[in-house]
Length: 201
Image 1 (cartoon, rainbow, N blue to C red):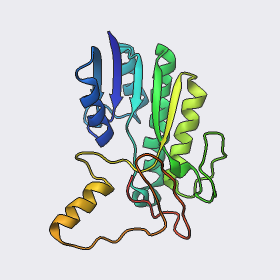
Image 2 (cartoon, rainbow, N blue to C red; image 1 turned 90 degrees about the vertical axis):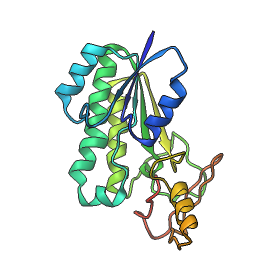
Image 3 (cartoon, helix red, strand yellow; image 1 turned 60 degrees about the vertical axis):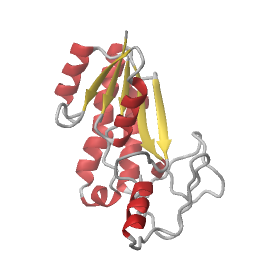
Image 4 (tube, one colour; image 1 turned 90 degrees about the horizontal axis):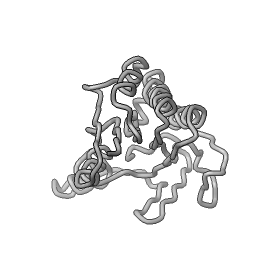
């Protein structure tokens, strides 16, 4: 039976993955901060030795852009060092790793949609820390998938769509950035003067 390790299983994406994987013949290894700190190299390596996952999905991350600016060391520990630790386990076990990253690795100045071959140029600590995580994944294992997501939303969780619905039900007003664009099937973002305006991932 294939073993899939979901690191950050209590988050929005982790919960959604569990819903999808539940009916399948897959052994799911769920961990979150209360169970295992991905920034603790020894903890992560020991978990990998004991459980030997075939696939690792890294759903962990500090995504609050304001918090990343205020606490860059914390952002880099989780977004970069954590990804490195999981990548080491993937290499040792011959496992595949899925690294959830962000489109914030780009500067948002392109006039056309980005591709995976475009140069990165993050303008925020968040984007820079996630790019560092990507680089560790690429350095430590060749069996990897890097997903640069735009806006993440779904049932439950703290996301932009749910926040809009909640505010609408309360009859309140919600202030949002006017220079960002996204859609479920084709996402494109442009930024004008506010490189840290993304609060919705």
